[in-house]
Amino acid sequence: MTMQPKYNELLLDDDVRRWFENLRARSVITATVYFRGLGYYCYLNNTNLKEILANAKSNEKEFKDNFIDFIRRLEKEGKAGSYIARFKKVILSWLKFNGIGLQLTVNISGENETPTIVNERVPNKEELSRILRKATSRAKVSISLMAFSGLRPESLGRYEGIDGLRLGDIKELHISDDITFDRILAMVVVKQKLSKARHQYFTFIGREGATYIKEYLDERKKNGEELTYDSPLLQFDSRGIRKNDFLRTTLVTRDIRQAIELAGLKMRPYVLRAYFSTALDIAESKG
Figure 1 (spheres, rainbow, N blue to C red):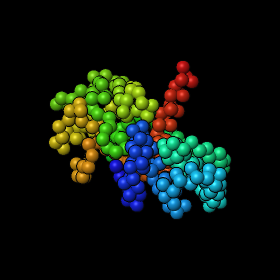
Figure 2: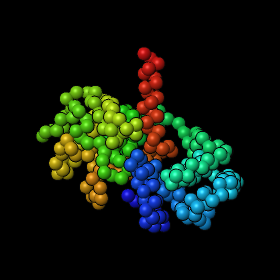
Figure 3: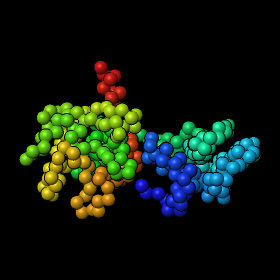
Figure 4: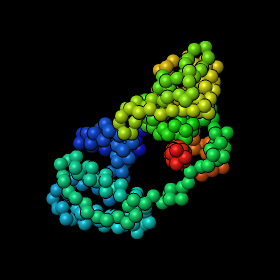
């Protein structure tokens, strides 16, 4: 896993390593965000992790007061409440893991607000078509599965690149001399390890998405790749350097972000899932 070098040394401490690995067992992304947040908190307050524990144990009120002062300082600097609240979660996680049940009863202004996406909107059908026209063949597959099937980018390729959607997970996909679909709609199975809710589920991909998948796989076969049902749905560029077995989440979203920018739009890749959700709501309202 890629870490910020200046915080790597923190993992040399066995207690920190155990805390990090315990978080990682549930979510790699959460573990990484918390780890960096804890390191940055130490940097901002000129302290270290052992000192945090010692101060919390020796003088609970003083520790709380200092933390509240830290929160107010960030608020005066204009930091978003949702950003500030992360430090509270990180510190509480570190304390709890080390057997300290301290409560940080501090109110944070705008804690549940996300100002960076407050004006975010869902692309309309024409805008989505524009994005798809600007996308690479690989990105078209990712965009389709998010916008038409509701998948998360982490389901297409995990954060650390060790797993992702495989060709065999598309149940009607048939691999032989030609790439074909036995049926449209095609079922897409998302296994437990790729599910945020930690249970296996299935969704479907329609004709347009299936066409993009076929075109992408035909392209890979033409480039000499031997496809099997165990092959990753999203493969590395043949000209690139392959460091993992599967495309990492950051590369999946990079593909999509580039297509969005080339289409002249400003929105996050995740908004494509909102497109799927909106389409479901419209379909439900029509009965």
